[in-house]
Length: 140
Image: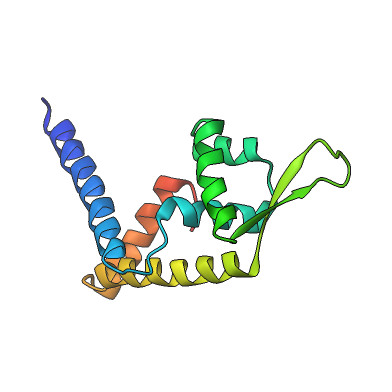
């Protein structure tokens, strides 16, 4: 294995470890909304999608998406609405309860990630922002 690959292996492991640490920090809070639920609530609040769009966005099967959306609907965070232009189509809409869950969950997520990022100096944080932006294709 070349040194570059070994370095990449270490980076990959660090990225997975960081994700695990973030999930663990979030899950210690009893009011924690699972990250999958937050992702769906955010997507629904931005687009009022159809179920198929949720599945495509999350890269999961439609039955898996339906299962998660059903749980969110049963808890009153999402509602199904008929599409005005096509009555056969059902779109998803976030409710006031869902907005509150999304706001609370995002606050918890920012806090958990912020406590990790705060270990870095201001310069290191700026460097990390540039690096992550480059990796995800955001221009500085």
